[in-house]
Amino acid sequence: MSRRARSGRSSSAASGKSLELRLARAGQVALRGIEPLVPVQCAVCREPGESVCRPCRRLLHRSCSRPRRVETGAAQLGGLPVVAAGSYEFELAVCLMAFKDGGRSDLLPVLAPILARAVRAGLGEDSADQVLVPIPTSARALRRRWSDPVGELLARAGREGLLPAGARIEPWLAHRSRTAGAALHLGPSPWTGSQKTRDAAGRARAEDPFVLQRPGRRLRSPVPVSAVLVDDVLTTGSTLRRAARRLEAGGIEVRGAVVLGAVGAPSAQTARSARESPEAGG
Image 1 (cartoon, one colour):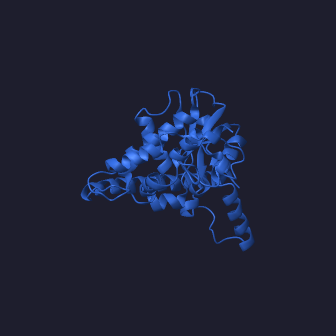
Image 2 (spheres, helix red, strand yellow):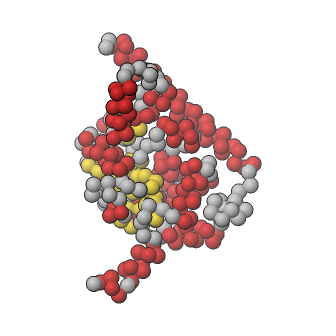
Image 3 (cartoon, one colour):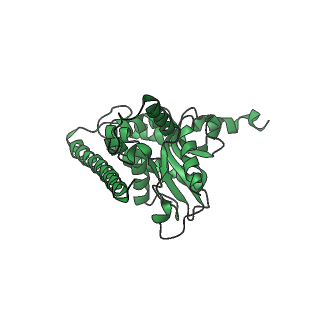
């Protein structure tokens, strides 16, 4: 391929990605403009008046009061340590789903501090020069939601000064569906090539959905030796494992991950009861 052709394709891809991000931001602005016209109600119990009413907020904070390790419940993590703010159920699950898929951006200030608490627990005392890498949203999810939930939660926590001192956010990962014009069908047509070739390409994207955004060009200082992944929900662990593998292939050690909720994780009350049980000590 000639240099001019490669340059043209790179420019088209960059333009497509830029357009996609501008459309997503425009959608966010439109949603924020509509929100004041709609009566606010509790995302959990539908009581009018607040984004999350006081009783539901107390239950939410109680369920997320003790961030905990949850990797034992995710079979595909491959040993990666994971800290969750809480179990993905009840108030936390309802609020997160409303924030992600229900257009409830008013829940951002409710959920960001909860995620920040889990980040502080995950990093511990050694937070200097630690990089928080959010799991990126796919092009399809970005078009559906008009937002990047994990990135927005982390950014809010950073602006509010809730993250540990010395830790910083770096979007080192990108979703393959949002690169090279994939979301807008720029470049080669999806209808070209054999069915076998297209199927193989689809399987490859599913197995390795992330690309590294060359962090060395984004930082003034040398790339730190380690990073911590941040996501919203832990289920099987396959997403975090693939993201960690991509970073490690670029020479970045992944210390672990932090999530808001973990499916199947014990609740704070269950974990507390287990520790206090007479049988707990054997």
